[in-house]
Length: 104
Image (cartoon, rainbow, N blue to C red; front, side):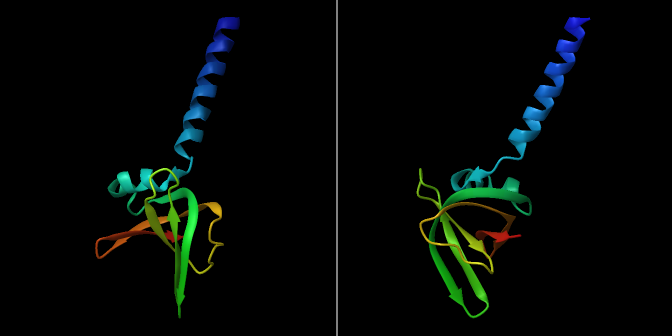
């Protein structure tokens, strides 16, 4: 009987572990390496806010991967503090060959 409970516990633990791992945020470089896979999907990305821009109704910032120095533009209405390490959720979009995250 104990083996049966142990097997059930292990199966449930494994299931929750897989769900947790699949929902984790990704680095900028992970997103850019797999951009076609994530295109149109809601994802979470982490990195450091590098620079911000606001021109009339257009605003956003670049999120930098600390390991590779790759950047991803984040289109948003709320600008973040430059130099701050953050995690942001949004939908990966492509327009005229340029990939960006539309913050949701």
